[in-house]
Each structure stands twice: as C-alpha cells, then as structure tokens.
Image 1 (cartoon, rainbow, N blue to C red):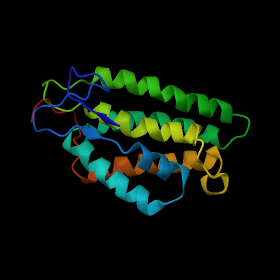
Image 2 (image 1 turned 90 degrees about the horizontal axis):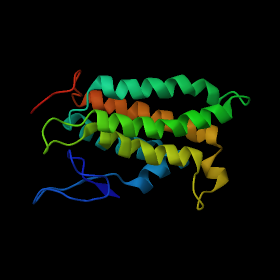
Image 3 (image 1 turned 180 degrees about the horizontal axis):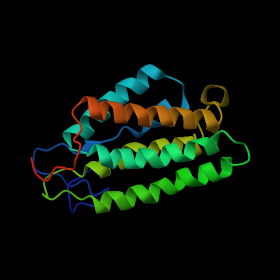
Image 4 (image 1 turned 45 degrees about the vertical axis):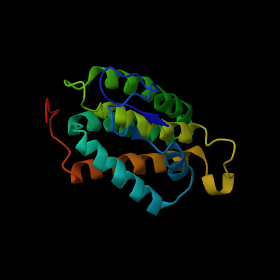
Length: 175
C-alpha cells in the first residue's frame, strides 16, 4: 500500500513528484506486530516509522492528542462488561484520524501530511486488533485484549521514537 501524503493528493492516487518516493506503510508488517507477540519486529518497525514522523514534522501535540484518546479507552478493554464499547471506541478512532488528517494539512503543497502518515500507520493496526484476518492462528494471535495491548505498545513505541528523533513540540509551518 502506498499513499502520497502531500497536500491536495487523495489517498490511493499514488501521485508523486518526479524522482520522489511515496511514503509506504507495510500493512502486512503492521498487522503482524499486532497479531503476533514479536517485540523485535515491533521495535524495528516503530523505529523506522517514528523517524519518518519526526522528519515529516508531526507535532508532539498532534500525536499525543490521538494517543490520549486511545489511553482513555484502554480500561474498557480489560473489563468484560465494557469491551464492546472499547471495540466501538477503537473503530471510531478511524474517522477521528481522517478528520485530523484533513484538519492538519501542511501549508506547503510539497510537504508531507504528517497526520496522514500517522493515520496510515495506525489504521492497519486498528484493523488487526478488531479482525486479525483469515490467516491468523488463534494460539499465536491471542484474543483481542492481547492484540489491543500490542496495539498500545506499537503506538507508545511510535510516540517514543518520534520524540527520540526530534519530534517537534509545535507544528512547523515551513522547513
């Protein structure tokens, strides 16, 4: 899956500047780190993606506001009576991410849409929590509580690496 995250380009168009590589999310790898407990793969993947988010100048406040929403829903996942609401809340994160992507378009057309990049990194992880896919092995994959825990680890690692690579405290207008 590849998407061009410059302003004005719609997801799936694949339009890029001559010689420029579009940002690509390895959906299979993201789903794998959520479906299977493989911390080494999670660390490598989030290191790469966190660096890309910092280079795209994603503001710490932008990623933290989304992370805060996920943190609020976390307790519902471990309460059997509220798990359905937790699943619903996690699914509703997808339209919130879509809104934030449009809301935080870069000022310059050639700049990447950092929130769009974050959305592309999180959506396959959300999908893997809710539906591990037809090729999942229940013993390896665990229940959706375990997948949600791995989703939280994935998101926390993205946030940590983003900051480690110099994630901006404020959205920056230009380069």
